[in-house]
Image (cartoon, rainbow over all chains, first blue to last red; front, side, top):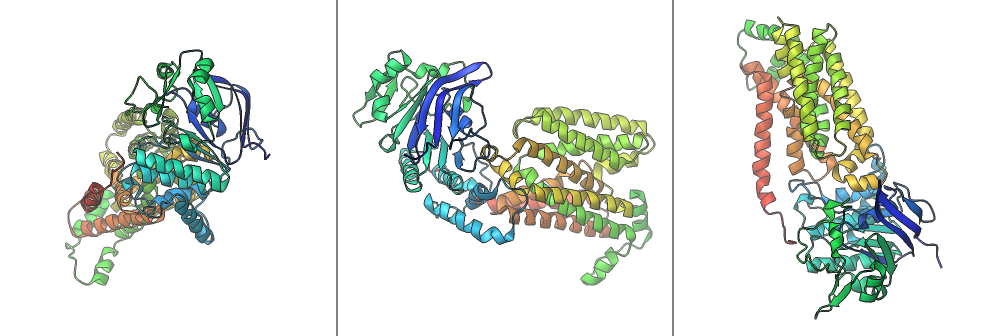
Length: 283
Length: 298
């Protein structure tokens, strides 16, 4: 048994006096692919911010590679939620990826390191299947292309933990599945643990090792078939939760969605304009 | 000094350009005030080109504009209270840089904060101008530049400000690029985005101090923003974009100085006119490419 990548014990999150969630205890092993699910505003991004050392736990303990989380840990790759990019920007995608190697270092960089830098960038670009468009201006890329380049930027430093905040949002179904498979493949081949925040579990469900369900101030983690059941979620959140499966095998969680109106809307940008089914969280 | 240069121009028989470039260059540089103008203009073009790329990339052209108008208050205050205009300019732009940096926490959404500072500093500047009444041409020079009245002492001031700007930008180059393009990831990777944001504004304040002597506070955009706006639309790498920024600024300044020598057009007008023409050409040339931008994910 190798040491846990992430280890949380009685972990709690709060912004000031507003409690987000508490009592989270879990370990994440190397190479594990974990989906972080839950309604909008339930504190999924908060968990990632804590792992990145951008927010301190309000209670409990959190260890990343056996150490307290710290900002600037190069063993962690991170892809935040995407803001719109200036469509006029002609800077090549590779330049974006390059920042993942040495963007945090001072100065202009030594010319002698350029060849090594280019090799590492090319390797990461190839690993995400972005060879065809990595030299295009980032303003001209589609959502799926951009997401692949962001992944390349996150993995170019060869992290052992990858944190992805809604990487599938704003992608069409075909691209959602392609990017999810790509992430699962990277986790396996690089023995890299992945925490992926998703609004809709369906594109990633067959690929996940475990899910972390964040809702109503609690975090529940386990195998998807254990966690995403009517009985488990109902008992956990002490309300009537129903997990429905439609004719195409897609899973929907009904009964937790009023969480979206919960007072701690710390991350209003988690709301997605295309949430077409406000009555059923497609999870 | 502006008057002085104009008088020298008027006192010689109206010069005409020939097809002999060497002869023209000899003619252009035969007066000390023209040589000074070319030296100062070249230094400022290089600095404004480099700093301007980051101004556009960080979408802080409004901050650059505000800094230059804060500089107007500082320079006119410096004259009104009897010390150097350059020191007043530098001091006030540095204070303004920190104020803008502290007022708005993140990169975006600083418009209101900057606008408040900007309006007040223009008002303050106009008050100082009335205090040293009798020297309206001094105020005019601050607003529109006095490149034809640059002294050797001015050149040294500009050169020092330029060197400081370039060294500091080189030191913060990679993290500044990272923070400008991808603030969230940069922050997670340990880049001090907040400190860099204020640091860049401070560097910008020094660059503005250099550039104001040549183009004045109102026309500074043409060198600090327009080349960056063009390069942003054209270049694939930051290195090339900065190179293009510097090249464009040099062309605008040199062309403006040459044309002004042989005509009656003011330098400031010519610099802005060339810059705007360049921007229009770049927009027209890249418009087709933008329209072809794929959006097949939605």
